[in-house]
Image (cartoon, rainbow, N blue to C red; front, side):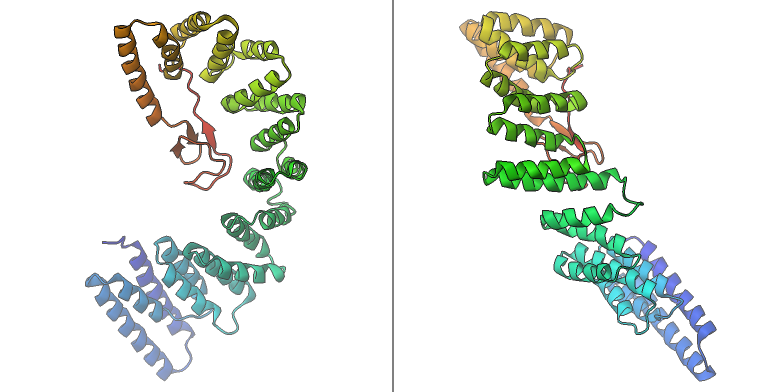
Length: 396
């Protein structure tokens, strides 16, 4: 059976409405008739509740709770609770009834429209919510700031990035929100989304303009820096690409695995792999990520051969055991082993690979969501910039 909390609230609200009705009603006959109607609805609703018919009980209690200036806040709270309990259609009904009341005070009208817009968003009726929120926004009242936040949610869902950026910029003009880091991070990602789209269409310079906008919201944003490095690399500006990639590695070392591939490509284009090796070697003592070791192993292999790479990896793994490092070591050793040993090593490699496939590579710092792929927007909690790579330094 559903939680009884919502029904206790409804019962309390009905009783409160009845008491307020007795205090405010004018005329004895009207008062008596009003009290009779309230208690009839009350007992009908209670009967539904006792017979485990919650939907009918809710409808009856809502009907019994008279809308007046003293119960509007109760209706607003009731509608919000219904929505949180998944009764979105009933929440919409409560808030629509409130909004239809003639002479509704401006502050209550704004609150009701905001709540109704949230109902519509929860129900997936985004066009209705957008119209309602734009009404509030056009009136330039104190509620417009809340309306902007909900509009951003809508535009993010619909991937209307320009509209989301416009609303974010307007919201950031309010001193209350000016320094809100999550709002700025989201706006930077909206610019990155536009930049990604432009890159796919081959508009590199326009994509660069979007990255500049992103840095206006969050200086040094990781995603924006990675996209800018990609743009520079595509245009042949390898030194500029390296500069941006090293900045990401320095300021956000947990993302080192994301920059090593592009760095290797840029240094190779400049025919300066020794400088790349020097960079990796210098950072090895301070980098817990095994991807740095694997990148160094590749360089050692290309320069000195498999045996040198095997020795390098073996030395590292003796100090810091790592499943990912072990897989690479096995890959190098299997071709050099005898038939029987090679068969056993292949089996071991398959077992370790199966273990790694089950391990998440990324985790959200906010809700704990885990995945094998990097998402800038967490699919679970819908927060930007919360998913980080899980650093595989060792198995211990």
